[in-house]
Image (cartoon, rainbow, N blue to C red; front, side, top):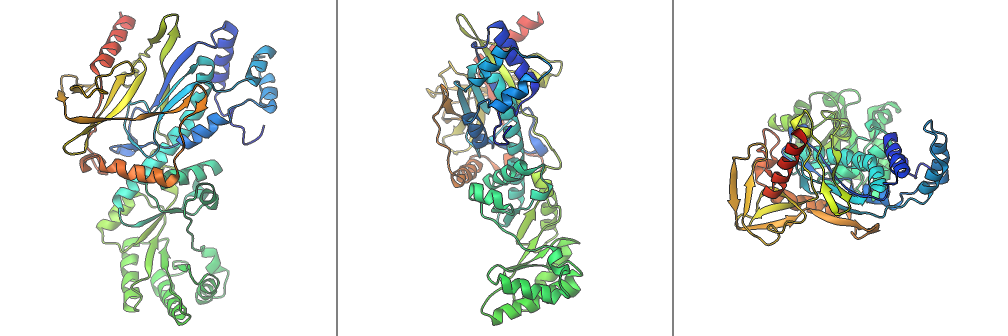
Length: 480
């Protein structure tokens, strides 16, 4: 099978359910699924939605090729050849709504809604979750890092530690959405137009007779982009002095050195000492870049110690989301078609947080007209129009429903946009820079208390009274 064909990028039980629907004649029955996550990652106050472009491209090319059909014919289930012939004709003909990439999103609100034949909707589940979960996780991690280094240059350096090639390039894209300035990955730069940055490795220094020779030859080759790695032997006694010598030589050639890079040791002490040495040599414009297993916690602590670092190369802990390697998003059936239209369905669990909210729903961001700040996200059934008409809304905590308030002076911003309608793409994918700008604008909608790294305030996500009552009624029906 071609590596470019992602149609079998799915779990086997999806194919088995598709077969069972085909076998029982229910394959054309419509169904509505919603994708969301239950818990914010990293103890953060928000997440950053990403992955939509990958999802759109996946759906556009969703087609079982001959290699896929041959592989399915070999499976132990012994699928009927007529089913395999049906798969040859497969195309997505349903509708899909999604949040715009770069949006701030919160637990238990629909981020993607799929309305299609159950045969089609079932196939989409695994890939949608794969793309949404990973890219949203990395974008959220990147946004956390940007929050603690708001004015510094941030570079994504994670390719060699990423979980394979696709994770590296799409992870780089996710970091750029959330505010990173560049990536070291050239393929990501070419695919998405992300600026690329790079210095040199320790091997370059080791491959020369002396550190001075290595620095001089590298600078001669790339005189307009000189950043020297100064910790191969001894940062303070060797690396920084030789970098200063090289900078002086460059000046004699009418050029200037951009930066030095620290990749090991006590970055707070080394950066302060190196800064003093550079300043004393009259090189105040030479920047200091740091790398070495950084994340938002280390950067936060280094800044608290007065580290003199201008630019950060963040790799392993960002691209792998090392402190939380999975988002845990889910894709749940919320309504199914019967003779008289759609009926809501619910999943009830022994874990209360896993009980689903039934019915086809829209999400609105409720913004105070006076402060222009978001007050809550409001989930309403699609047949409700109170929020669209600007009527007073009762906002209450779904966990503690006795906590409530009524809001009147608000703007309701719809969060779910139509992406596909009857199998046709109706949403024009924005440029990456447009997505970055949307993310920056999203941040301005929220009070700092919701955005802070430590102990963020919990942002309200509320159900409409009608959606709440429907959920309670279905629970009563199924629990007796």
